[in-house]
Image (cartoon, rainbow, N blue to C red; front, side, top):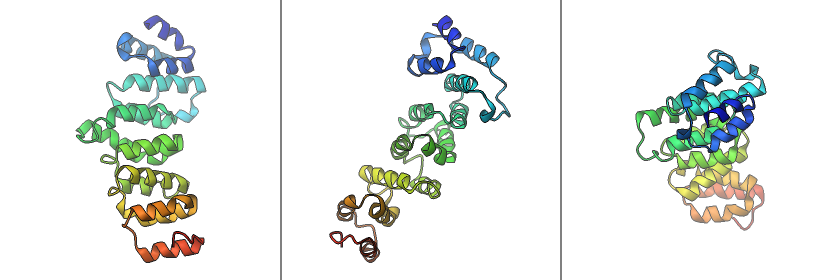
Length: 217
């Protein structure tokens, strides 16, 4: 296994693909880390935007190897690279511990909170799922604030999924959900209005009248 992975350093996209599915205990992490560090530039102080595509893959592989020793650093590097592997890393380190957050989990959650917009830019569907599953570590207020300047559909989908899992968690944003449903998913608005009572009735009626949604009135 070690020799096969060493050779894949010269084909780094394949290396990342293999590492994503191979168990970490069947090869020497230290040996592969050393080989990767010798094959790419020193990453400290270097913008990943200046790396070649092959070196970006090598840096991604190095981040995956670093997870066991320093998941916080690994997460930061994957965010910088815009790698979808960050979802698996955050899922492994946050989702199982969402109810009992250790100091290490809190640090990783801090990295996720600092990069919420980036998380949605990488993959908005996976970001919605992760943010909802980790709502005890990533406050709803933080997600909504981070998405204010983004595509409103991301906020709509996030709040909708959150409501389906936990009606109370996003209760302060139900009026915002009325507006988002009216704009992006009017067919689902009536069901939401019936399911929630946490919005000003007059304001909701005004949104329906403004949008010409007769049945919802």
